[in-house]
Length: 402
Image (cartoon, rainbow, N blue to C red; front, side, top):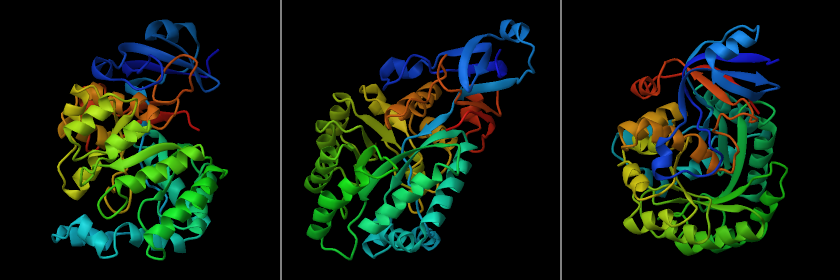
């Protein structure tokens, strides 16, 4: 006997078909069916079928729903931070660029100072509160980067906070270590690179938070392509899979390098060239786009249409962070991908579920018999209505949890 039934469902997009990155035509196949119901036993999907059959068979209360999708998967966030950057936002509104503010000691280094001063428990509560807010905009799995401490002690406390936060939220948290977010001012570049590669990365890999990835910011003013490669190779030696922030403001060749190394994902890609697209097309690397960053910074959007059409596996994330993307909603992210980046609603949903799950090695983003009931019912009846209302759409009900 099921514990509960979700149904009758007006429109279900199950994304069934197994885990792994989807490309091309497969990104447009969301497994849509109508007038169905889902039976759940022990928090797992036990049956999916015609609504009238399942509802007649079991003497359980109905849970009627309009549009139902898998829980959304945020493949890129920086929700472990303290402090705020409100003044920087106002400076950008007066014409200063993100890069200029960072060069003057603001940006990531501003958050570094606040995060270093914060207590571990406060960082954990920040993560838990943000993850809770994200869950009720439909995100049930969220990647979270330890990316602002930029010292052995502070990075350790960030990872401690991520571990503690798992008990403060029902959102699944997938940790990434990103000690290579910026060069802190209390070390020379050479000293910090040595410290990062020789001590901090092995420390992170052994931490109880169990981060899966090593990430690096390959950008002018941050890490060069050669420096980024050194960081990612150190991560591989410690068992951490490579990820890279690349082509956000300048195309330096980081995408090509990371794809050649077998990176799990290349993220941002606002200014990716034909060479970068070719590298992504020919690799098993996900192209993770965050349209919220372009929206928040007033930058041109990544060319998602060209990436999909060239055969790249596109995924989505919010890039939720205090400086360049105060965007917490994957629903908004899906809408921006359709409205501003040329994806179809089906492609955007695939990018925000099964593809974003593959981009962080998470077995979520699908509704299939035998899988956990990781499901969202939305305040609308169809996927078309969802993207039409993307600026304010909210979850009606979120089922399942970590």
